[in-house]
Length: 181
View 1 (cartoon, rainbow, N blue to C red):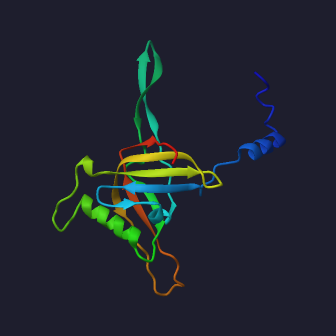
View 2: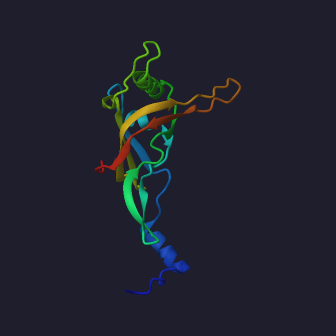
View 3: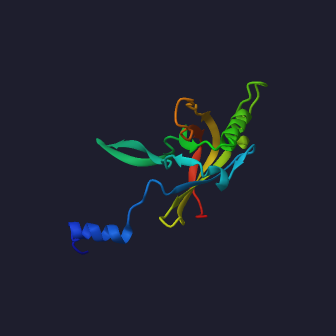
């Protein structure tokens, strides 16, 4: 084993930065959302501007033995799966907003008091992380997704006509690593 601190000076850090570079917050794509009711593809989802990469955690089980506490790994949990937020630009044709509304009505329709409460009605969301040339380098699938909240819009006739953005919250059951598209 060599010197662990050999590259910890400024020149070593800079050389590593040149060789490996850094991940960037804007290099992602929501590739698709597939539900039994509506499907979003790349042409729809170019409007998504920000979101978060889903989290995964292993629960800890404390096992006492002879006055010591041993930590043993338990099951996986998916923190934030109850409310994954995306922000999107609203296109002039309102297509993305209209699809989100249709998806929401399929989950629960107040006109008929019916909905798709069963897990067979849930969808999947596909995400990809990109390199600086636009090539996918990692992919994720959010399994068992459904629209939970379609955000409000702020509209104002006294402004210069800024592009409308809106938030949506999607819940999901768990996520998996996916094949890179």
